[in-house]
Image (cartoon, helix red, strand yellow):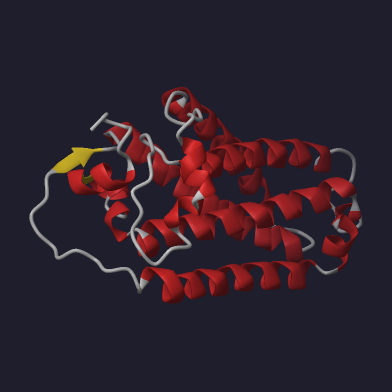
Length: 230
């Protein structure tokens, strides 16, 4: 896999990201559009993210896109002017992920009822709304968080290995560390695209949570019933 990636980096990224977007579009067309949405009405709002959590969320969003574009520059240019910024932002991204772990250590811990959500694929492969038990974060969000944290740690380790010797040169970019770093970066980008799709299109009510940290009580009742023990 690493050798395939090193030999076809452009094609690998293009196919991976294109297929992810196509699958998201297909899912929306097949499943999301067929679900009957309730009529809009005034709703009681619940604070899901406090101010600090909203800020951290935006910092991670901004940092990720900086990492993506600076990483793409490093992928194709022999002397990437933004390369040093890529490294500093990467370390900051990992630090914030660890801070989030300290804040959310109880919320991202798996519970017995999460297995019900996993077996049902979160209801995302059904055209009808499913009331599945979940805490503040459902099983899918927990999996996403842990995979992104592991990816951030792995990217830091591989980046450190890449900095040894002449690995930052074009010749050095053909080593295992460079290949792993690129593969993990591509996987992380796929995860983020999926996360954005689910947050904005598949579950449009959750989009406002990154603005004011609030979400409707009706949505909590339906999708996060174990959080407030409703």
